[in-house]
Image 1 (tube, rainbow, N blue to C red):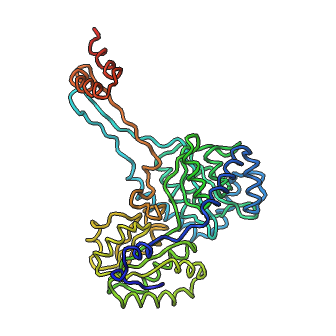
Image 2 (image 1 turned 30 degrees about the vertical axis):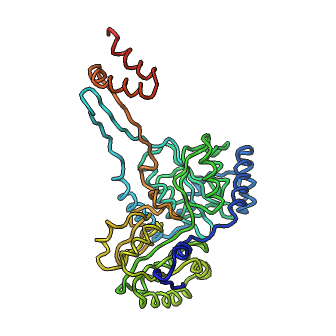
Image 3 (image 1 turned 60 degrees about the horizontal axis):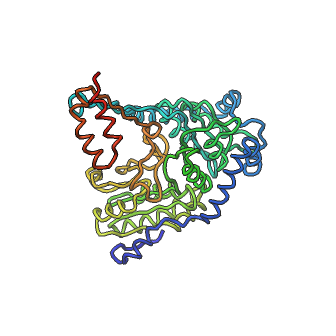
Length: 432
């Protein structure tokens, strides 16, 4: 990782230093995803089956994971692995259950009652990728809040392996998280299938989950079609920003940076520190740890997109971080908890030396489906509320309408909407 000094950079150089890695040919990806969507809409199961053979090398007669496949997947996992999945589910459930919204009812004035009620979305589609590595943790992060919200229809798509089976850990994690219907379909074709429905894959109201560039493009495209499905949030390559002072452990900081760099070559990791010594120690520690990683080649390429920035003080680092709006933010400096009130834009925050980012990825209880590429300045991470919708209700008595009626009529006249006013005056003028 290169080291740069923030104070020595001009405005343009500062912006360039923190720019996210350039995405691949967006137009080419968009057009390919659009063609896949069109094919699935017109060809249904047959189109999905053909694409599954082409992209995943799997020949499937049925997409749905059967009870016997679930049982076989469970047998493939060791007791220690099953226990880890169960522990993660328990912690995620424990953190998400209190997120269920509470119904509110307010009498805004005598005779005028207003209420807000919440309902689970009728149907949701969860996508769990299986590219360079299977992600059972994603199945948990999506399945648990969907189950807590009580969405009546919860389906999940995940790519099959060449032998026609889905990754056993993903299948087991999804099932134990409350997802009964799992389909062995991946890529943009899975997004299209869930957004529009096929002969065997149900259409859903909203899509959730991460994926590659084609999946992301497909999600964006179907979300712009009123007849398709909404989506959870904008998504991009994974990223982490660490703020550390001179007393931070270079070993810990390097490990945190590498834990994100190994996600993919387009990941970005950033360290902000006022300590030149720590910067150099982290740089050396990264090289020491890199050679021990099975995905070192991926991590090393990701580090080309990354940097260490020397800043004047921790306050400057927080200001830079708020502007960058990282997916993951790690605070390893003195009195870090007291600085939380200054942190505004981040997907998820990890406080202190004993809070590695990987606990949030797996099992601390928070959700790891988070906004990336700066979207944390306006989007939240996944929670139970995103699997629900709110509806408002109002009920007035005759006296309540009489008290409020003149206000309605006056405002309607200001807008030139006579019928709005008449809906009030006709009621008030009625004999009963």
